[in-house]
Image 1 (cartoon, helix red, strand yellow):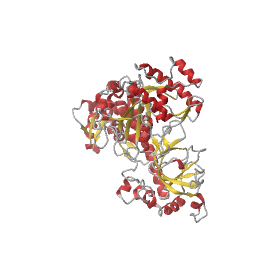
Image 2: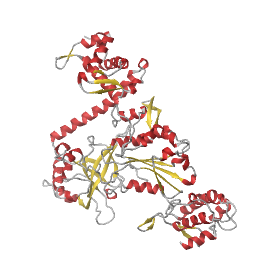
Image 3: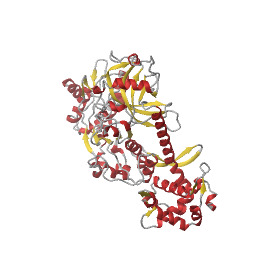
Image 4: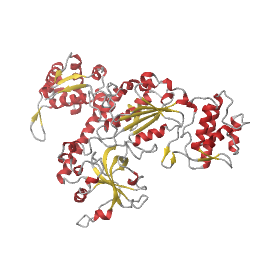
Amino acid sequence: MGGYIDNLTTEERVSYLIKPILEVLSQSSSSLTTAELRSQIIKMDPYIAEYAEAVYTSEKTGIPYKDFTKRFSLAIKELEVLGILSREGKGQNSSILLTPKGQELDISTLNVEKEIRAKAQVYWKARRKKMTKKKTKSANVAKNEKRLLWRATANFKESGFSWYQLEVGDIVTYNYATEKNIEIGRFGLGYNKDSGEGSNKPAGSIVCVFQIVDYLMLPDSQTNKAVLRCVHKFDNPISLSEINSWFNDGSSLNLQGGLASISDTQADIIINKFESIIPKLSPFIKSSKIFLPIDQREHPLEREHPLEREHPLQREHPLQIMLYGAPGTGKSYRISSLIRESYPSYNEYDDNPYVFRTTIYRDYSYFDFVGNIMPVTKDGKISYEFVPGIFTTALFAALRNQDSGIDVYLILEEMSRGGDIASIFGDIFQLLDRDDTGKSMYGINNKSIYEYLILNGVLKAGYKIIIPSNLHIIGTVNTSDQNVNVIDTAFKRRFDFEYVGVEPIKSNNGYVNNFSINFTSDNQYEWVKLYQAINHVIINDLGLAEDKQLGPFFLKDKDNDNLNRKQVANKLLHYLWQDVERVSYTSGSLFADGITSFSQLYYAFEKQENILSKSVIEQYGKL
C-alpha cells in the first residue's frame, strides 16, 4: 500500500503531487520527459516513492493497478490546461517545461487547492459536459440516424419577433429551456404563427430555414438563448396544412411553441421534399447535404462546415476605422450601415449579441475597457474574480465564432473624450496591427485575459492572445469637441479615418430623418432644409470652422410636434447660442434682431415668436 498518501482521498493525492512537479520543473534548465519528471519527484519525496510502488486492486474488476500513474497524469493535465506548463508529444517521452506563467509562481506560498485545483474544475466540468453531450448524441444517432431537423416557432406575444422581419443573414436570440442537446451547425424551420403585412405573408406557415450558430449560457437561469441565423427565406411560405399533407400516416407537425427537434419520421419526409427546392435556396446553403450528419457528408468542404467556406455576408477584411465629423452628421447611422452588411436588418436598438457598444469618457480606464479583479458574491461568500470589460467580452465572442461566419463589432463612441486613449488600450494597442489575413500580427501575454479565455474554452494553453479577423473595431470622434488631436499619431496610424460630412442623406422617399417643425403659428420648417440654411450662415456670416456645423441627425424625428419643439428649445438653441453664436466675432447672427440673451431666445421660441435671423430665413428659401 502507499503509506501516508494511501490515507488521502483520490483528489488529495492529485493535490499532493502538484508542488513536487512544479519544484522539479523550476529547478531544471531544460524540458524534461514525462519519465524523467516522474523519476525525479519519486527521488525527492519518500512518500511519493512509496506511493509509486503501491499496488491497488479494483473493487469492480479485481484487477491490480498502480494509482500513482493515474493521479500523476491528472496533476500534469491540470497544470497544462491552466497554462502553467506546456507539453509536446505523448506518453513517457513527451517533453514538459514550465511556461512563463509557471515560472512566475511562488511555489513556497502557492495555495494548490485555490490556485490550481479550483480553477481546473472549470476545465473538467466543461469536459464532462462535452463527453455527456457526445454520448447523448451517439445514443440518439444509434437510436435513429435521421433526427436532423429543428424548428422554432415565432410570434410577437411568445417570442417577441417574427420570422417575416428577418432577411437572409440576420440573427435572432431565441429563448429555450426544455431542449438540452442544442448542437451548433444544425438547421431548422422558422415557423410563424401570426401573419406579416401582405398576401405573401400568411399566418401559420414555414417562412425560412435557419441555422443554430451559437448558444448563450446564462448563469443562474433555467432559460438559455440559442442564436439562430436565417440562411434562406421562402418566396412563398409553406403552410402548416401543406406540410401535414406530406405525412402518409395522418400525423401533424407539432409547432405549438419553442425550439425543438422534429420527430425522426416527419423530419425525413420534410427533408426529402426539400431536395426538390434546394437549387432555389440562398447562397448560404451548399446543397441538400446540409441535413445530413457531418460525418455522413461526402464532400470535404461539406464535412468541414455545412455552409459555404466564404460566407456571403461575412466581411473579407476586418474593419478598424475611426469615423469623425461634426455633431449629428450620422456617425451612428454610418455604423449601423456597416453592421447591416453582416446583419441586413440591424438597427441600433437590436439586442444583437455580436455588437458591443460603449462610450469613452474622461475617467474611462484600461480596467473598464479590458476588465478587472473584482469582489464577487456567490452563495453568501465573497471571492475575487476577473470581471471582463467590453473588449474582453467582444474578443471572447469573436474567438468563439471565428470559424462560423459570424462578424463581431466593437463600437467605441467618443474616443477622443478619454483622458488618454492609448492608456485605455494599454497592451491591447499591440494587437491593432493586423496581417493580410486580418489577425493580429503580434500576440500579447495578459494573465487576466489569458486565464479568462482558457477557462471559457476559446484559447488553448500556450497560445498568445490575438484579435481574430472577425472582430471589427469602429470608433467615433466628434470634431466640434476640438480634441481629436489628443489621439496620438501611433494610435491613429492603426485606424482608417473616415470623414462623415454634414450633407443630407438621400433615401428612396426623399431624405433620411426629414421632418417638419412648427416654429411659429405661421411658419413650419423642414429639418433637412433648416439645418443646411443654418450651416450656410455659420460658415459664411459667422466665419466659423466646419466643425461647428450641424449634421442631419443633430435632431431626430420624435414623430410628435411637441416633442420635436422641445428638442429645438433644449438642444438646438442651446448649442447654437453657447457653442456657435458666442464664439463668433463677426456681425452676423443666426437669430432675429433684438435677441440679446439665451433666456430671451428660449422664451421667444416658447411663445412661438420668430427667432431666426433674416439670413437664415433667406437661405432657407433658396433650398
